[in-house]
Image (cartoon, rainbow, N blue to C red; front, side):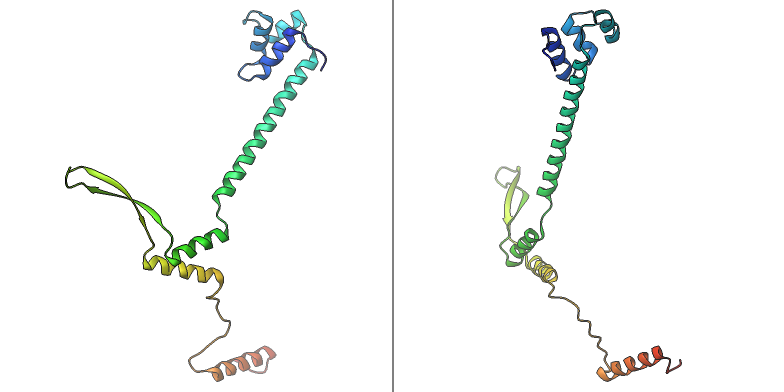
Length: 177
């Protein structure tokens, strides 16, 4: 953009500062009456260069792009900070299973001397059932409870082998049902 006059610089600054529309910025910069529209003022005075409007539009677009990018980055950071990884979850479950995890709890009670309700904060360790449940979940995550693909029947392996033989004959067309 070429060199700006003082009034053009003031108009540019007011138009890009936010909160003012172009006609209000023009009225302040050129001290014209607020009652006339921007187009009337510009057509009468013809003082503003078209490049100035392009610069204002570019500035506002760059500002909008920067704000949008910043908001997107902030949202990604918030999401990343709030989502626990599998390692973090396993570490927490391990702490609970070992009985080392301390949780804070607020309790209320009545002070016998003064008769007022009193709030207090206590730290608790996990109960035995919570420790067992955490250990169970850890073992499930680690795959200790993986199911075997072996079919067992109370009649024994010979019964299973007989069923396999029958199903193979049916597939070959040897046995009709």
